[in-house]
Length: 222
Image (cartoon, rainbow, N blue to C red; front, side, top):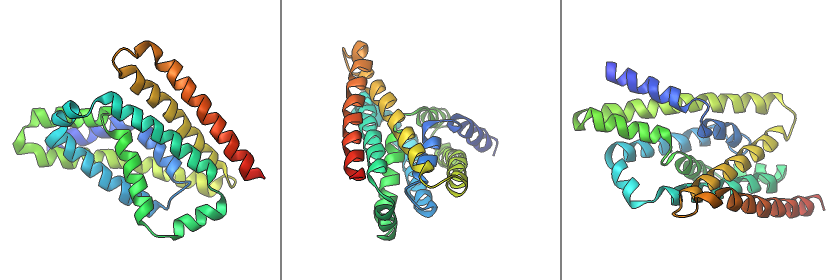
């Protein structure tokens, strides 16, 4: 029980203020809370299972720079899709069923957390706890991570209910765009021989992203 509480508390603190907690706020503008909960819970369970059972092996097979680069591009895409979706399209999107939103939340959360400090923390606890404590480590890490992210969901819900229409969409766009820029820069910086060029590449990607968003906004206004 002591080990369980220790791990849960550590994961909760590690996740506070992290990007996935802010992503929960952003996703509240696009999906129902039910879909976000289902998508994030399944992603958390899968991520911590990987961390506990196969964390070291995954780190060897999948380069960190590739994970970060793909995640950065994914965040840019989600920012653009937030801008691209109108209110009517968003309503239709939410009424089409649960499969696509849940998978999108799962994929977004998975990419954001894969290789992040919370997963590395889970790997460390699993290594020190041994096979006999694997289940305890998995449950404690998952509960601690989800408990912190619930705060993000609740904050997003409050903002959605109390702020003017469209405010949360703008906030979501900003959060996704910022994470896209910083995560892409981090991924490029981890590429062999690319450390000095990471901000240049990220800025070039941001310029292209801004142009695409500008064209999308102009088309939407017309």
